[in-house]
Structures are given as structure tokens and as C-alpha cells.
Image 1 (cartoon, rainbow, N blue to C red):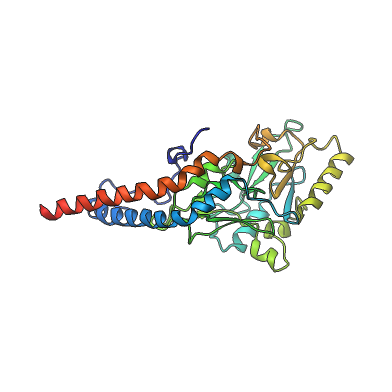
Image 2: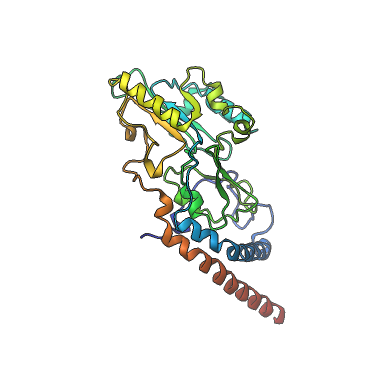
Length: 327
């Protein structure tokens, strides 16, 4: 089985990343910053190693396929035949999560000229696609975390920074994360985004399915704000039944498939479409087997890697410091 590697993580543009040569992003001289960064990285890695002794058993739990979706969990159903690309869901999401206003206003359609992905400042985005059935009626797809029943991000995380909640959301704990970004590699939908604005404080950002609102009896902001009812919140099993009924009653309108019902073990976010899903950039050929079962090899090596390598790095660092002191 292919092992995960940080090298597999796609390179992304770092906001504010245009730094003059020889200059550290903080404004300090690059050479002056190296010692501080080295110390910070070594200490952070050593801390992770300490945590690894505690999470060894956790990794074994993940590798043994013990993550199970909650049977009564909630879910979302997005009917892409109804979406009109108004971006009201984007606006509602930003405001519900206290995110900054976008550079391009929500009512500006020029954003559809290129495909977008969720970022640290936008947990959900809407993209436009050509409609093979009617060229004058484009199709739109809402993109966000799909909240897998058995999340690949959770199975790949060596410090258990991810949790699948009874309400259906997959949540991330930034206080546990040490920035390895294996979750970004493990996600079959390429959703988790890394917040590069704070390079020394690792943080992954993504949709939370408005978990706080749901726990308090509310519904996710995007579902509440959608003016055409394209996004529906409810019990996942009820949404699947409703989706099947829509397909049964309108076979010419829908593809006979509910995306997310079985893909990678199933997801809390479900989709209906009037065209094949790959036409809308959904991942093709996803297996029904949960990714947690496909990451066993990687997870079995995590405790070993996180306990041995930090010790070696610490010894190298100490040796280098001793040499510098003698000189």
C-alpha cells in the first residue's frame, strides 16, 4: 500500500508570502530567525513525540477500524438541480463563523470564472459548470467538508485532532494538532485547508456543519439561508429516503445515484445531481470501503516514527549547539 508523505501535499499559495530574499516573513533577518525556528520545531516535534506514546493505542484503534458513524446522526442533502449559484450559503457561512468579508463581494459573479476550493477564510464555496443538457442554464456545485461517516482525516491523524460527533459533524481540535498535515493528504475530497497566516501556530480549517447551532437545536447556516431550498438539513437516514423518493418521482431530472450514501463508507453530506457527478468535479471511482481501513499500514508506523525520530533530531540539535558553543 502506498504510504502517505508530506511531499504529497499539494503546494498552495501562502497569503502574504511575497517576502524579499533573505528576509524572514516576520520581518527579521533570515539567518537570525533560523535558530528560533529550529528550536521551536524541535520542541514542537518532541512534544508530539510525547503525545505519540499516549496515542499509540489510539492509532491502533483507528487501524483496527473502530471508528463508526453514529446511526442517528444528522446530515445535509444538497440538490444540485435546484442550486442557482446565488452564493447566499457562502455569505451565511462566513457570518456564522465570524470569517472576514471576501475580497470579491458575494453578489459578484466573476468568481465563477475559475474553480475554487474551501480556504481559511471561506469554509464553503460554490463553483459553476457548463450544463450539457442546456448551455444557457449553467450548473452549480456547493463545496465543503462532506463529514465522512468514518473520516480519513481522523484515521490519518496521529494525535486524534479529529472527532466524529453523534450529530454527524467531523470536528477538528487545533489545540492538539502539531501541523503534520496528513489529514490533507488523507481526505478523498481535498477539503481541509491549512491556515498559512500563522505559520508557527498550525491550524487546519474546514466546515463544522455548524455543530454549535445544531447542538442547540438550530440548523446549519447555509441550509437556513438557502432561498431555493437546495440545501436540506435533517436525520441522514431520512434524507436518503427523501432523495430516493425524488429520484423515483423524477427519473428524467436526476442521475440515479445519491453521492455520499456509500462513497468511502458514506458521508453526512449527500448530493443529488441531474448530470454525472464527475462532470461537476466530484472524485470518480471512490471505493465504498472506508478510508480508515486503507490507512492501517501508515497508522501502524506512526507511534514508531514519532518516538524515534524526534529523539534523533534532539540529539543532532544538541550536538550542533555544543559545537557552536566551543567555537
